Length: 353
Length: 95
Image 1: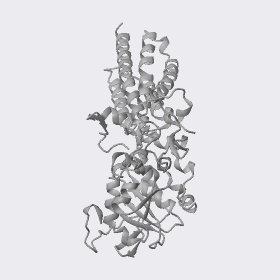
Image 2: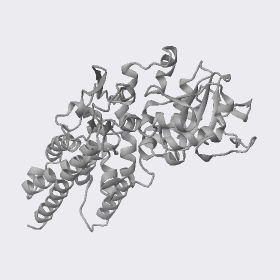
Image 3: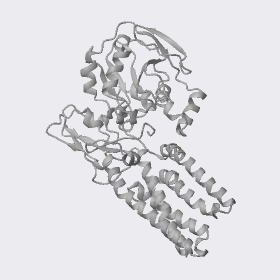
Image 4: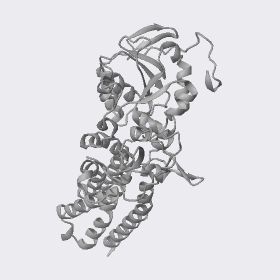
């Protein structure tokens, strides 16, 4: 065995019971958990909670070897991350395929992000192949990885270090059946990441939930303070800002490809400007005392908030490059700070003249 | 629909002399940046590159280089520069 890893026989750790383990299959390396290819309500609710940021960082499965159906020594081995949503996507796609599932320890992070962070990686795969005794379970020497794992795994290195050949499967688990039927050949469509409207909508809750708490607290504090008469803030003063947040975190991501311009912040700024004009009109700002100053302040602040939040969505998108985001961030942050601070100064001036 | 980010910013480089035309870069690229041309890889859609680095790490002939990293503003803002390289410092609370 390579890399100096020596494991005494019969010492392969047994994966403990879990809600999604429905049986055990006896093999040369002990009993391997069997998982169903149908998801239960508990699995689906777990995924839904993770999307909304509830328990997202503890939504994990124990790394190791699992199986679906009735695999034998010639059955394919699929590798995934120990983020439970990744694991669930894979086993759901294995309906009708007898297969082994090897779960790497990615610290509960999905394949794509873990590959970028170096936990879904060559070393971990080689180590896990040894730790699970995979070469005693299957007679062939091939493991199938999700294509997005390629960022962290060098196929030629894995072969050198473990003897196992890496085949990069499709990007999406749902294409696995078609991939297997085509003799492990992926079509062009299977090789490309998508980022369509549905994908973007799924990602907006996580962007929003992080901001929900501070927004609620600030709104409540301001409204309660107004009841005591210390400050005179009303809902009409607050909703333009909440609108700007929603424009940046929800509306811009959903409408992304249809908004002109390439920088995310520019897209957010454009929609934010439309919202600022709407909010000034709806709130009757123009007619208030110092109306033009208050309006100018909103024009400076609201689009800047939306622009900043839209820039944050680069992290959830599937097509932004490191160099590009670096360039955009460097240009946008000073502009956002300048715009918001001058807006605040004008607003304060408007209150006092 | 294929999305494109900023123009002319990516650091992707292909050395055709080292390329053997094995085609692994076409397999691992999620953005269809490469194509095979006269039995060698060629960069077809440079601006679509997201600098994930899958092609470079999987090219055993070292024909491809790219300064890879995560295209995430929050990581860049919160990240630290170490030896000129940005490290994702989101404390495991992001993607």
